Image 1: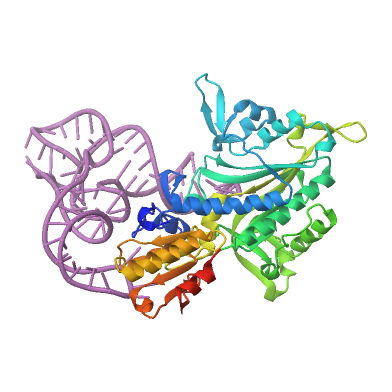
Image 2 (image 1 turned 180 degrees about the vertical axis):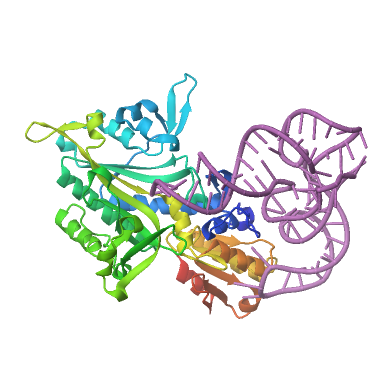
Length: 440
RNA sequence: CGGAGCAUAGCGCAGCCCGGUAGCGCAUCUGCUUUGGGAGCAGAGGGUCGCAGGUUCAAAUCCUGCUGCUCCGACCA
């Protein structure tokens, strides 16, 4: 993409309402624009990041055997009356009337709908286990939206729903998602720690929040420091091997880890003092087993192998991609701007033409741009008339992991500079070497 | 939902107390000079002063109502 033809409204000054660093940087980098309280338009650069996050989520969900569908944002109130949640949900639910005065709502989640869908088609244990997921916009009319897309009213959510014949099967489904989440966050360059979460009236230990540590996190968390050194499960993990999955989950749940609501000072005290980690955290995922909470009111039953009807056991598994964008910035930035992990960067490489109009520089840039693009790399070519200093600032602000600086000085020696955003390191290489290093 | 505050150009702000035909910085456009870490000079464009009423010869400014937004607390992917 040539910057001169792109839409990248950079702000040099910060809108006053932006209070935390991710919100400030997202506005300054031209990723989002607020349209209303807690409601944002995703501008091209922000959308690229959001899409990359969703792509990783999809790959890891699919790897477990989960199946993607897409359910609507607008739901009928009748569905929610069936589960009893229409009255329970309160003012957080955005209620709408259509032209026929029918009660509708903008979905805050999809348990009811997915249960109803499965009820219509699944009648036998042979159709289980089943995990259906979608990535769809949700709306929760928060009392006080804040922090940009980190706590917005409209937000994107990947929500998966598992269906199993019994609690044991549901546990396996839960473990699949647990392992998938470890891999998903790891691929985004995040160290997410599964922490015990409140399970509500159902009890048990089958609910975990996935927390990443960041100084601006909103809740206090306590965990064993060894979590930070643990390696994520490999890509070829066998999701059908229940015992193997269980051992991975055990490995990630044995050491102490809890948010402040579930904090047990005594248990934390038992962690060796030099391994005790108290920090602030951001919740980026939440997985939950809730048994027959919805299948019972909806009457979702299947015939078992013995010919008797059984209520299906469910779990749900959420990740907030739009929140993740903000969380990743909170976890990875410096004074100059965002530092994207390679896997989600809006563009892998920036080419900075430090002297637009200089034939040799223009030519070298155009050549690199064409070759890298042809090899499948996402490249943002800054071909504008801006001054060099301004281009450096922009590239650092939007956080491109690799920057190729092409200017008359180094080009006179047949070199360009290859700069790594994360540590600012640079080296002089030939354009051909730069291409070899960065090609897809 | 309780408490506080803000609303003037794309962004950040001044002007309001004390009414008199709207200003600064950044950004944008033009020209010249610059040219490797957000350049300099000169010029230009851009505003129903959130909305609606009221007071007044005259309202960004005073009064009333409304709307939007932000921050602090309790709730949440």
